[in-house]
Image (cartoon, rainbow over all chains, first blue to last red):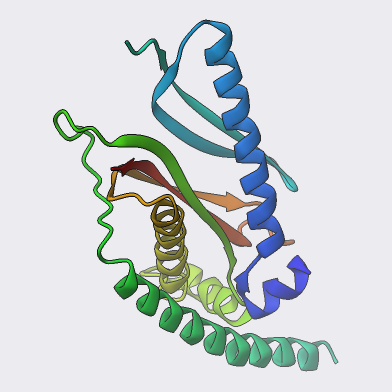
Length: 69
Length: 146
């Protein structure tokens, strides 16, 4: 499918979904970590993506965990 | 025979790619006009003392370049200069990502989006090392819900 799209161009829906899911997973892990240290909010969240190798990518989310009163 | 396949791919890429791009642009412009009421602001400084509820919103899209454009970009690599065939690709991806972010915010009933950031990454693909397979653009920010 992605091979065909490489000829015609256009959106790769499967990839979009895959990356969205992975990003959600990264956010969940970040929130879990913030929770475990007793924070109740994460400020200034940033996302980043790096290509590890062909067919693999790393997605990460990071931010500042704080306790809001 | 190889040349024939190459020319067919080139023609298919040109025809279908161009059609898809036009269609996509029409949809982008139409949705942008509809979502103009929801401003996305890049400023980092939060609005002073608002009672709005903040929420992280994001939108992303992966777009692939067609065969014809990749070929043209390959030629461009020989002589240097602006790679105009890739420019619409990135423009479309950015605008689409912002639109999806805005749509998410709109569904949550947000009034505006603050601290919008854009991120572009290359999805490794394609047989040649230097060829750009597809790009992913992610737009994210803080939506303020009244």
